Amino acid sequence: MSETILVTGGSGFIGRNLLETLGERWRLLAPPHGELELLDDGQVARYLESHDVGVVVHCAVRPGHRNAADPSAQLERNLRMFANLARCRDSYRRLIFVSSGAVYDQRHSRPRLPETAFGEHVPVDEHGFSKYLCAAYAATRPDIVELRPFGVFGPYEDYAIRFISNAICKTLADLPVTLRQDRRFDYTPVGDLARVIERFFTHDPRHGAYNVSAPETWRLLELAHLVVRLSGKDVPVVVANEGMGAEYSGDGARLRDELPDLEHTPIELAVARLYDWYALRRDAIDRDALLVDR
Image (cartoon, rainbow, N blue to C red):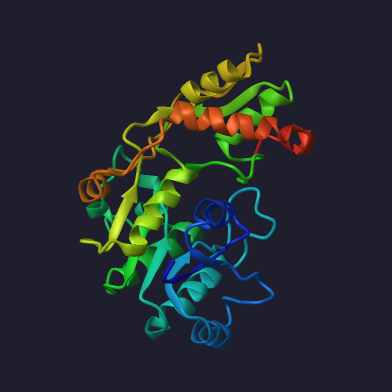
């Protein structure tokens, strides 16, 4: 615990899990919005100058998903937050940028995209384009590590729209598990992502960017039936559209080669743990939020 770690987006899904997972082993700072406005370059610089930060983990993002309260200005805000942190390179040792598989452009998804596929296509959506531009800049800086997770799941995600949590909450509410179309997904438990992030606090990377990908992919239909089995209930699984959608997955060989002792939680175990987590909090689940097919 010799260094202080600044986590941006500490109230979000990934940030909140990082604080719970790593808080006992590291000195973590996760200032709320009122204490640190990432869109204000002067405020960011003053904060970093007044705190002895060794590593910045940048998780904060302007969301653009279909359940976002205000998805406007994603490009401008995401770029500005990243730039305000990146420009203060003399105030920290390393910046870990939690990026996304969206940098590869989901219009051209294909199985097991390698890191070298970056730049083959430019994303047209604001979320993907903002991540793409940040990634392009990060590649010019040896002190920035970009991590590209694909599907991350776990506690505190938005169960109204995130598939695994949505399926769990629907079984707890005795509702059918629904999916628009079956497809293969690359899912990483958020605790596994936290361990990857932690390793780069001290590990000297050989590359600037790494896919954070599970060793295997899963069909959404398989995961739906897994959740139903865990529930012990007789609820139906409903697929709206026939056929298979495009696979969304990355090649994680680069990360596994560099960190061969990195542990991967079997998805069956991770889903079971998440089911138990929600079961303990079933009274807090908003059933009405599960009735809207987003």
